Length: 181
Image 1 (cartoon, rainbow, N blue to C red):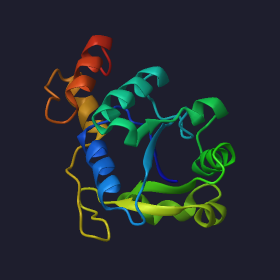
Image 2 (image 1 turned 135 degrees about the horizontal axis):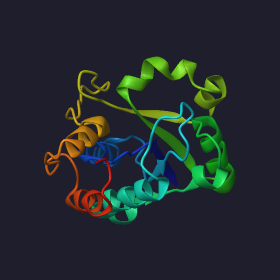
Image 3 (image 1 turned 180 degrees about the horizontal axis):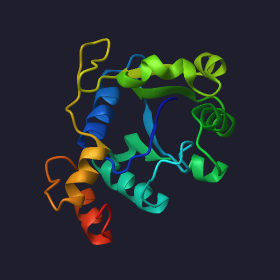
């Protein structure tokens, strides 16, 4: 089985995350059987995040349209402490022997990969699926829309609509929980 691991803060997950999932599931070669969303448990640079449980639930809601193809992994919560990609990948490999993992990253992260914790080992363990971001297309020239979690949080804080930026279920969840106000 081939699995794409898509980690991030998902603070909150938005339509560009969903488009990235669609892109990976539709175009990755060799084909991906499942994509696992992995919300960051504790950001290594103490980035302020909405509570983990809220981000997990929003990821579940955002993954809903993909059915069984997209699953949520709480591996970083299980590991505890700060989230590091190498640690997460090694734990997933240990818990799922025989599964071939690929790591989904934005084109904006390609240049900084070599500064990641344990980069030399990580690049030997997984292949990378690079998804374009606005201003930084992938190798195939694909660029996702310029939506970011930062923009979403800012709009919520200003009382502006996020309807076109976030899945309807996630919009409702954010409002019900009073997140990002």
